[in-house]
Image 1 (cartoon, rainbow, N blue to C red):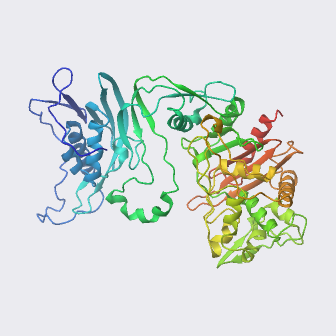
Image 2 (image 1 turned 90 degrees about the horizontal axis):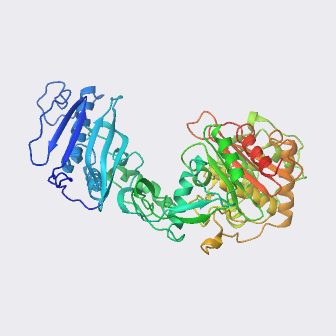
Image 3 (image 1 turned 30 degrees about the vertical axis):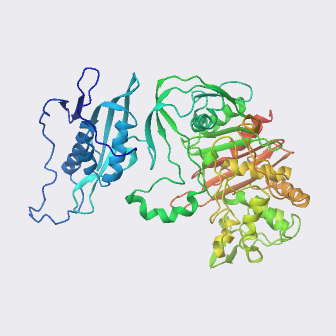
Length: 579
């Protein structure tokens, strides 16, 4: 966080003296800028070798004692509070990164009069409260927040030190982020729904990250005037430096780093208000309210509603703080079979009403695939296999495809995976990487390396319904004359007609029938469940259309999509169509 600079402990507040307080185990300690530091007792013996050995080279090991944890935490917090950055950084396992962050805490964030109050230890973790004053050009406000640190053994000697993470300074800081106080990088914006009503997090809790993103992109364009604030300036993922601790993972992420988009900066404290500009979105107030209500009733649920004929996003909601609806990157399971079916029909490997194999098992690339409950369909059609979500009906065709066949279909017809969507805020546009052998076969059923989110899958079912990819958007392109993504080749009418037939049949008589009951006849749907390593239950997916509405949702660890995400999607389609 900024260049390294010695912190001047003589820097005074308005009274002419800088006063800092540390509260540790109920003992308050005061330090005056020109006076001596009061002496206090630190709990425990800390660094003393448990075996009594005088060998300074011995590396300590084993679980940390309560005294060691308290002592390491106290040493770090005391030094940070006093402004002795070098000493505080030395009490961590990454002094370089800690020095940068703690220097920036004072120099860039302009936080003074710091009081750190240690909370009750839980194992190796120590919570603490930060109180201070944020000052900038004659304007100041108090700041209070909670954070935590974890104590570990240093690799070189086993001594207890603070495990350095950016979140120690502030719980919302990630690698490469900075705390900055000053004139806001962008003016505030007043985001409006399609009817002109104001969008607020009080009314729509899911829209926090969306509103942050709108401000970052449109603050300067909307005619507002910036205020003064303390904010988190997010790291640019394409050039954020790696600390020594994360160097081991740098190579594994380098290939995908360039495809990531910068997250929106976040305001933590407003010292003086700016004048907001206005940005109108495509969100429907009624549908957004309904989406918020539905996901709030289900843990880890996310949903998107859009209009297939235009690409307008009408609602987006999440039951967690992370915007999975727009930025999630999850295996979509069998909802991906919409794209795979388009590919097979396009290549003459499947046809809705023609016979198609659906055995209990199908092997490819050394993996043995099976259907849910090991079912099989003897003498069935491709439509029957699609409606019942038969995995082996797709795996059996893998040997007739090239490694890049699905990737090309997804990119060229459905507009996925090219990192060029411009919806108005940051989004993940799906990923269908070129794979070979078993992972290539797995990608046909939405596993392997395929990654999507509800926005992507709502777009997929919308494209299947209309036959034309319309890039979803939250802010009309006319607002800033931006260019929306397009597909490089159209879907043939033969493929579109059969996809519509497959999806309608699934909604009427397949795995989606229960959720879609009463919504026909102009409707279609596909269910999905995606296995995730380390989860007992798969993620449940559901995507569908009714009239000129398309929606997709996911419930993480929700099991079958027909039972978890299905009712959410169906309820929103019903609400949006008036019945």
